[in-house]
Image 1 (cartoon, one colour):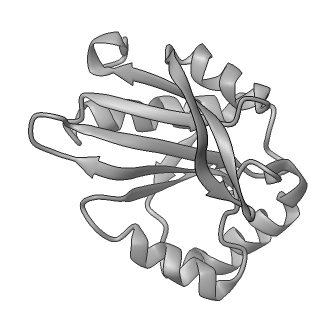
Image 2: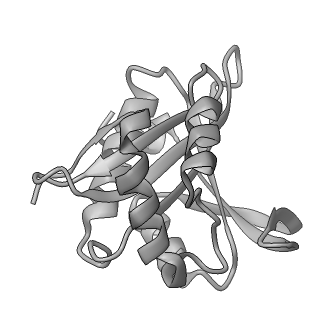
Length: 169
C-alpha cells in the first residue's frame, strides 16, 4: 500500500483528533499529540513557519497513517532539524510509518536542503528505536531528563542521520 505525505490543514482537525484519541494507548508515555480541535489549531499554527514543518502520512485511501514533524530547523552551516513522529491505530505495525519516514527524510535531505536529522527517543520505546535504526540512524548518546512529556522530565536516547548516510538522496 503506497504512503504519501501532505501538510496538515485546518480541515484535518476532526480526522486527526479522532486518530489521536483512538491511539492514546499506543502513544502513552512516548508522545502527547494534540487531541482536541483547540490543540490541533495551535499545532497548525506552530507548523506554519520555516522552522517547524509537519507532514501527515496518508495511505492510498487518504486514511491517516501518522504524523512526522521536523522541529527547530536551523539553516546556515548547521542545516539540521529534530524529527519527531507517531503512528495512528489501526494502521500501525504494517511498515507504513517506515515508508512515510523514508519519504520525509528524502524530502529533508533533498528539497529542504538539510544535512542532519536527529530523533530523540525514550530508551524503553523499542519499536521507535528499531524504526530509526532500520532507516540508518546511528546512536549518538543519552540525554537524561531531556524532554518534558506527560508531566515529567524523561530520559532520551539520541539518534541521527546525515545526508551522506541516506541512500535515497
